[in-house]
Image 1 (spheres, rainbow, N blue to C red):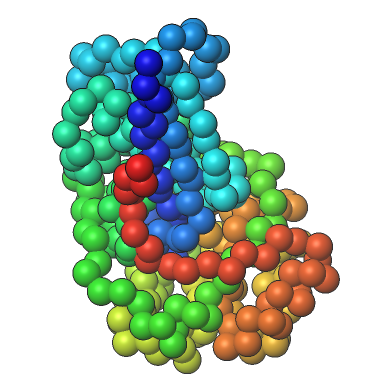
Image 2 (image 1 turned 135 degrees about the vertical axis):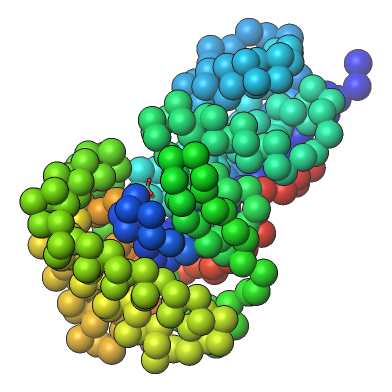
Length: 311
Ligand code: PMV
């Protein structure tokens, strides 16, 4: 018997460049893919192996949406994407397994379909996700995302790539997995919104303006504007209460050294807040700050290719 064919599919992680939380209140966000990838390999097998949660969720989605029969298969996962840090690991892992199983069962490669099915899996993982994560990891690049109403979401891939003079200055620091879930943070902001409505509305309006300015700065490669936008966007996130004291002190150090940093995603009220997006003309300074706080430093590239077949 010949060697059974292996199918490997990979997908990148994602980060919110700006607009998280405000996006829940119908404001725009820009999300980017990052070159931390997950690789999923499947091959047909004759052994029944106990399934992990990811397989159970994905197979259920495939069975209910497409009525396809999935044969026995072996699964191998290799990932550079930290889990629970706001880097889209669930969307990346679901999309790759969906694409690999569709290929294994002889279906044609269709990114739009894979994205729709990944959104269904994301609903099982997260309850009421926006749909921005799965679209970014599947299509890659930069995505402009806006929820217009409960059933209308504008997911618009941006057709340009970030000029390298700007993109080379981005790095990530992993402050660790937040204690609170995304859902808990969204609910906390919502209860504060009811108490301080006019103040929060002003903050979200400012965030919308900054997201629009960010779009221009990303396109033109304007470093001075980038530092100003990230700093101001971070202040707005702090003012709605999603950045812990511990993480604020790291961000202040980066700002003092001439750079800018912000939380990405839901954040946290106490302790770790997940990934920090940092921008600095001298990345070594950020690396030294991360070392001082004993935190993981990740040299990344933004706007990379989305889901792809590797073999
Ligand atoms: O923490 P993440 O990466 O799941 O991002 C959450 C982003 C929020 O705007 C806070 C919530 C949402 O659904 O958009």
